[in-house]
Image (tube, rainbow, N blue to C red; front, side, top):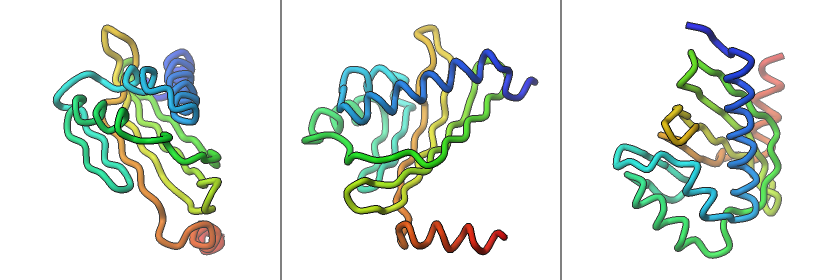
Length: 138
C-alpha cells in the first residue's frame, strides 16, 4: 500500500479545501455533496450525533446561519492506497477563540471523494490549552 501518493493526496486535499469553503459559506448543497449518501455515514458534532446521510442532511438544512466562522490552524491528511484517506483539522473559532478539532474519513466512490465519517469537537480549555499542550511537548 502506498501512503500519501502525490496524486491521491492532491485529490483529497482539494476535497478537504472545497469542503472548508462550503462550510464557511454555508453552501448546503456542496456540504451534502461532500458526504457519502449512505445510512452508514456518521457525523458526530459539537452538540449533535448524526447517524446516516439523511440525518446529516436534515441537520444542515435546519442549522440557521451555518457553521460559526473559523480559522484553520493545521490540516494533516494521510492517504492509504488510492481509495481511503483521513483528514484532521485543528481550527480556532473566530467568535470565541476556542480551539476545535475535526476529523474526517474520506473514501473514493463512483461519485468521487466523499466523507464517510466525521467528528467535530471543541477543546475544554480553548486556545490556552492548545498553547499549554504545545509547551509540554518541548
